[in-house]
Image (cartoon, rainbow, N blue to C red):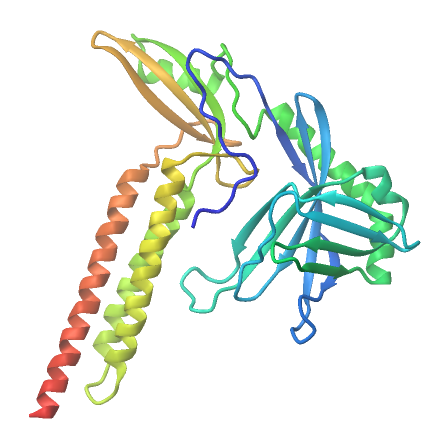
Length: 354
């Protein structure tokens, strides 16, 4: 399942220049102490941070709440109500602007662990006036999550919130200076790093910039996946060689192998989907500037897409399709190993029956 993105990338039509840019900045994390989903469940720490956006119409401030959970994803939708209660028993009301669910457990572990990120707009002056006592977020099943902000944390937060708001604004302003935007942009001027690359690669050809934006790309994720698959292959080969004839090691290895193969296939499919369905940048380490160039040569016009990791100068030479093919090959090898183990197990059973 592809993770939700806060801003879905809008395709840029060649004949319609777009100049919308959104820059995002964030503060450091702060504690919101505890939440109690159900009386019988153990409480878990809840974190938050301030997020600030700079767009065409100015700036807007949000608070992001990270809710940890166990084996199930929390169902919270956009426009659900959020109530912030203060120490003087007054409260302010806002609504969920966006949500995102992240998996906290290791990719191939049997037990799943999720966190839910809830983003909602807030009034900076109102939030800094008083100590926050409680935050209630409505869920999709007519329930709500209550975040109890204890006296110590509420007092500390009341003192530090102005600093967090300032941090988020400065972070967004720096991104604006570096042009690390989140949504589409289109302009006549080609970025210098792209221009230099084109002049070196196509010295005698003319070209046009037809699309420029900053997007999320799963290059690092699929590279790590390929590494993980190769490690599992090596581990399975080693353990199968060490498995003794008299124990039930084959059954355990087969069960684990089947599970891992499925996890690998699902994860690879997710990254392929993310690669083919481009999403706007998220402000993280997987953001790339994407430049679609129209190369004009003797054979007509050709398109070339260049990805440059945000903060770097040279376009990446990472070949997603090649890595995807290698992952598929490795997964097939892992499946064959599991098949051989199953065959050995069956042969062993047949011998024992004789």
